[in-house]
Length: 364
Image (cartoon, rainbow, N blue to C red):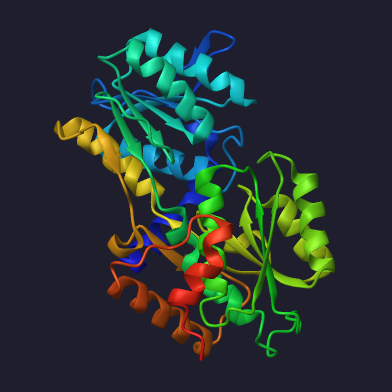
């Protein structure tokens, strides 16, 4: 499963940049381009509408993973899809309504917390329309919610950060034992990712300090960079990207020379200072949603991807910074411990991290 996860996520960067290959819907203008939306050899098996996050395509993360999954479904199953890219949170509902009112879409996929509000409003008014919401839970007979455990996605990369910050063999590691996470927004899933990262960073040494800053906007590159530089000045030598594309964070790494951790699709090539990426098989999940629709096996309810079924992993392919055998050994030991102890639940808020570490940490 680890190899498959790495392969799927490594392909997302290239697929996500090919935004001209899918069909584009400009819902505000009321115009629609169908380029690339027709399946070869006949009518499409499935038509999907997608409302992306405000980060848009080319984020090397969430949106690009969904786009990659849809492109794979188009290639393998002949689906067609249209997408909308909101520029602000208040556009989600309008765009979701427009897809539902069109009446031609078999499935409407909506992303993020703002998207959840849209689905809550639109889905009850269109009971025969099927919806999939990603990263939020909305209950309804016509809704499937894909709700990941954000803490699980980042736990192992947190272990990496906590070990690397104490390893003097790494050129840019200092003696302060401080790591950080920059969040795009203060929403539950992202906060849980920060908490999981902190659990991992403290797993072998509870004295490791974890600093957290929230930008308030996934597209505010300048503020993300400023927060990263501020963390560096406070002694942080490894920063976890929880800010979408991470462009501002990577700029800070290269200006000051310290380490970073990617998130979502494989971000290891985006900076020579990235040591690993906290991967998530979202592209495969979206592909499976399309397949379930075609097979007639799609069901409403909540789906919870977990680390134990291979939904998350740390990716090191193509990273310029190589992790030592000793670090890898300890990360794998942490994985084995977590997967074996199925009753363990990671902290999902920063104020519960220290209690979790006190109970579960493996300090020597």
